[in-house]
Image (cartoon, rainbow, N blue to C red; front, side, top):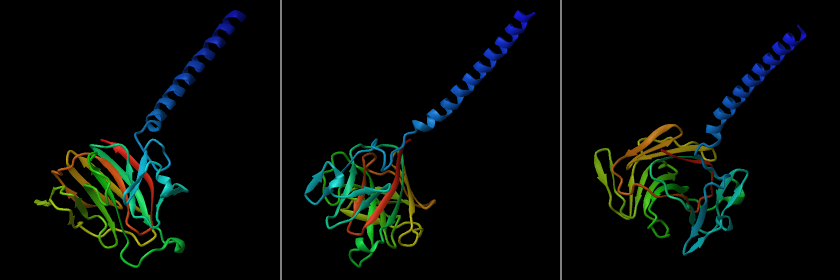
Length: 234
């Protein structure tokens, strides 16, 4: 009788242990897809950048710009950019930006101007500014397409470009007040480009002549901060 009770107790314990083990496997399996999500950010060394200012390339971008408190901060006397060292084809790029309004960083009195470029060809040489497609970030014009160095695109039934710098106006104004964080989402699939600002589609084009390339964050003299940079291949 005692042996029979011991067998029942042992069997129940083994069943409970097995069930807990299965649950643990399921939980960690569920977490695994999130941990391995294709994502890059300014605090993740999975994305590497270099910096460029006029006539000079810096393999260590933080010789020119800074990264503090989870923010990429572009400022200073040297106009330039951060360029990704990797290229992307079909992707979704998401990031946040804000104009740096801290008095110590103020410079100039004109409209604040910057941009996020994509599909910068690997063959494009470092200049201010290289070939590619720009999500314009500028007071009163944020969301415009800027097609640089003879890139062309069909927008609302009309082919835009080629030219050195061709602006295609956005559909509407969505930028927040100076100093507030704005969210940019760029989706590119097989030459079709969608540009979103703060959750609203502000521009759309197709048949882009440049269909893959690098990502670039511009600094045109107005101090600007970027954070939460995520690139997801589609």
